[in-house]
Amino acid sequence: MKIILASQNKGKVREIKSIFENSPFEIISLYDLGNNIEIEETGSTFSENAFIKAKAIFEHYKEPSIADDSGIMVEQLDGRPGVISARYAGPNCTFEDNNLKLIKELSNYPEPHKAKFVCTAVFYDGRFTIETVGEINGIVINEQRGTEGFGYDPIFIPDGYNKTMAELNFEEKNKISHRAIAFKKLLEKLKSYYGL
Ligand code: IMP
Image (cartoon, rainbow, N blue to C red; front, side, top):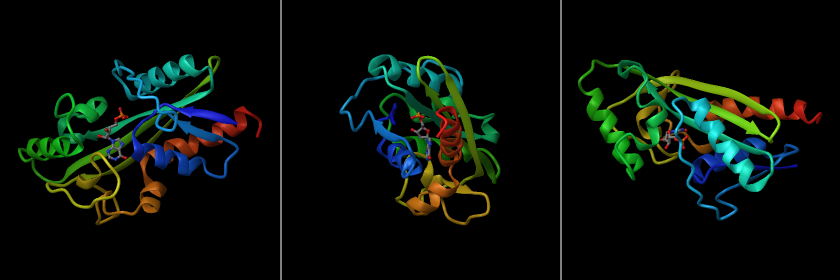
C-alpha cells in the first residue's frame, strides 16, 4: 500500500522510511517524486502544520499522505524555537545558523538548558486524520559536536546519554528519537485502520 510522505528533508525521509521498512506500507517521499512544492507552514502548533502538509499533498496526489512537523523546545526560552525551529535564524538560514543562534541566546542563562524534541505525525486520506506525537527530553549544550543527523542534533544530548544526537549513529538515533516514537505509533494505528 502506497503512502506519500510530505517531506523533502533527506534526513527525515531516511528516518521515516526505515521505520516503515518491512511494513505493509511503501513510503514515497516528495524527494523521490522530484516534487519541490513549497507548502507554507502557517499553523501555530506542530499539529496544525503537520495537518496542513499532509492535506496539501493528499489534495495534490489524491493518495493517502503522511507528514510530520517537528522542532526543539527549550524550557528557559518558554518553548522556543518550537514551530519556527527550521527558520529560527531567519529565512533561508542553515542548520548551523540556527545552532549558533540558540547557543548565543542560551549563553545568557545558567546551565543545564533543558529541552525536548517534539514530533507530530499526521496521516490523511481525504476522510480520516490520524495523529500521533513523540517527544525526547535532553539538554542543549554550548558547542556543536558530531556529524550525523541534521538540524539541532549537534547541540542536543538526550537524557541518559553523554553523546549529542549527531554523535549517535543512524540506528541509535532512530531507536530513541521523537520522530521514531511518533511514526512507530502511527504505523501501529495505520495497521489497525487498514485491518492489516
Ligand atoms: P519541519 O521540517 O518544519 O518539521 O522543521 C523541523 C525543524 O526542526 C528542522 O529543520 C530542524 O531544525 C528541527 N528538527 C526537527 N527534527 C529534528 C531532529 O531529529 N534533529 C534535529 N533537529 C530537528
